Length: 289
Image (cartoon, rainbow, N blue to C red; front, side, top):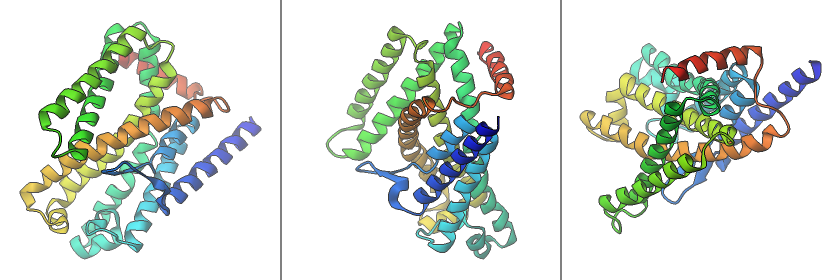
């Protein structure tokens, strides 16, 4: 027990160090021709899976803290105030402090919590006999891949490929994945697919909560900062979610799966008695699907 606690403490410190290094160096981004995909949230997701949601929430807080420091000290973009309570005070007074604290910290803390429970749910669905649940899991994965491929091609080849062609290619890739998952089955690959969904969930949690927070709390100020009309903010945000969010989620799914499978050979994923209780709750939820 003592060795286990020491091991978890060391692993927590390691993930914390990785987050800090990624946040303050270019290592936190992967260049993908038309986008620099953020991967700083990946150590937080892995921390949730191997150390549990409590330590995952702590790692998410560290992620939020690095974002706060970066946006306060560097303020590299005009919209940096949405992540910095210090800068937000100039735009919205005292209320801006609380708004930016929410956007900077809450989504990142949730990144360290949500993936763990998604992993439990998907693992149970895949291992169980719920055929409808498996079909839904397959379908979600295929749709996400379709949207990602379509958005990536449209951004990479805006003139060479029409929207129809990009849609067809994305649809073919999505259908191919659906067919592969259906024919090959997922029982033996339950760990793989559950890790992939955990990666997707973590990335989407960050994107959706941050962008929705910006729209709800800072619509007008954000519009002024990025130089668009107030009624165009929703389009900008949806564009970020549809492209950056989806691409980063797919990247997170790939990396979390690869690193997770490798790390699982050294340390099993977090699954204490409390974890089993949570898994049983996830199973009940899966049966209702």
